[in-house]
Amino acid sequence: MTEAQDVEAGTPCPACGGPLRVDEQQDPTSLVARKVKNAASPSAAARFAAACQQKAAEHGVIHRCVGCGYRARFHATRPAA
Image (cartoon, rainbow, N blue to C red; front, side, top):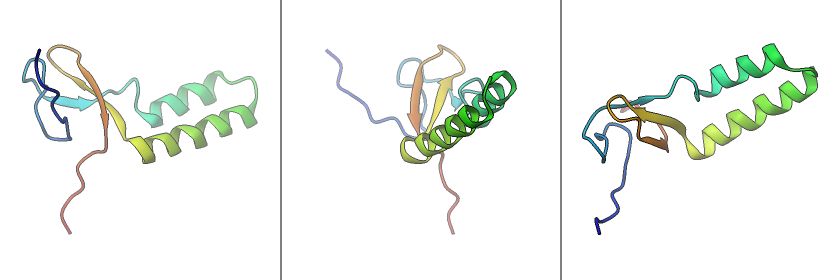
């Protein structure tokens, strides 16, 4: 059995070694835009937007491997001050 690996922003995919990029379909901005466009209630869309932004702030954004489709959620690297 293989050992668990820590996946962080900037590291290659643990499955195939390919680059991990932000999954555009799961990006909080695009999720909120789709919900606002298709929502029956503006207040429901606002609650969804707040929850989506909070989850992204707490747990990070879903990234997907370009090569194999492996997905992981983590915070993007922050530039050094």
